[in-house]
Length: 142
Length: 142
Image 1 (tube, rainbow over the protein chains, first blue to last red):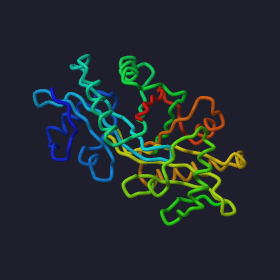
Image 2 (image 1 turned 180 degrees about the vertical axis):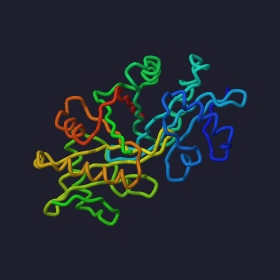
Image 3 (image 1 turned 90 degrees about the vertical axis):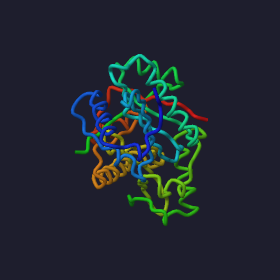
Image 4 (image 1 turned 120 degrees about the vertical axis):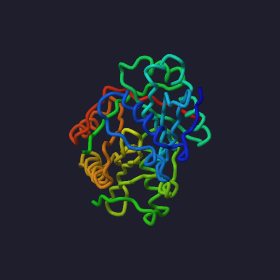
């Protein structure tokens, strides 16, 4: 099992399709942005993946941004192939993102997860994330 | 009263100090990143401000980022000078950010606010933001 940061040169059709299929496990027919577009120079993103036998079985993304209150990371799209859950893959990918956060000297990393996702919430708590007294609000634009 | 997008060329010591003082109204001795650093080329950010008689009395920031699930906006650091609240300044600045979101063809805009901030929550609901079944988690890095 390998945990690494996805580089532009790692992207090929097989990788794109594997990540696309993996992402569908998040449910729904969600829109997907392709990897080449994600890794364009302007988008400040780190894509961590987990692979086993040349198959990508997990991904986790973190975008970094600066606002007046600090240089921060924002984690989204964390998904582990349903056949491979319970093996600590999510934790390993999150640890990699925390490493990236340290290297980039972020002041804070944020993420959100639905209240019913108990295993995810336990993992994040275990990694030092604290729940905020805040809810998240979303406005669809299209 | 004027609502506009802050450009690099708008920044001078007076503007920097006014925004810095305004930001302190968010409470605490929070770290502040200066405006020049915010508006560097790599940081995908729109800073909206409201000014009256050459004084900045409100700011609202939106960073944009791309993940697999879409091209999104993330609003933080919305603050209106306490002497000027209740005049619809927050709404005007938010509308400007929604315009920017449309221009940038974002699929979704996200923000979070503390559960006790009823006027802010009412404003966001009124602008079409819906509360998610999610809480936000934060990990301080330093």
